[in-house]
Length: 118
Image (cartoon, rainbow, N blue to C red; front, side, top):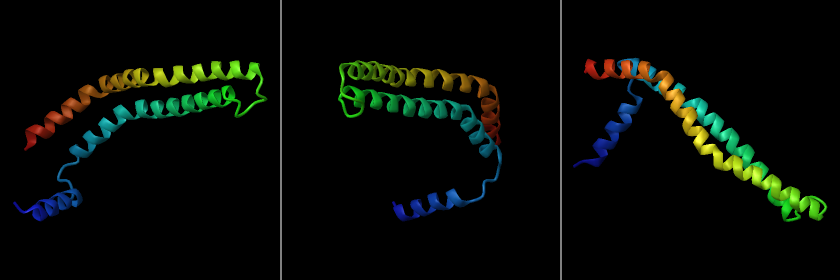
């Protein structure tokens, strides 16, 4: 088995012009269905991680005046951040599922057209 030949063919297929634009349209529809969930998940994840980090810094007396009040506030803020991090994935799955349902008929129709052409 000539692995160089297989590798060369794979690279050539990647750069070869697509004979149908339906595949590209299918990829765009798939991306359109999944993108809102990914944007939301990254945004909430970053925000919740920052909130969690700020709460940790307050509770460990890295920032703030080191009083008991800032310690308690740090724990509360950290718990809010933990809740945000914990709820992120279930919300992501729900948004992604809604996006898939929204575009399912178009994607299935286009996929069937592509599979029956060849």
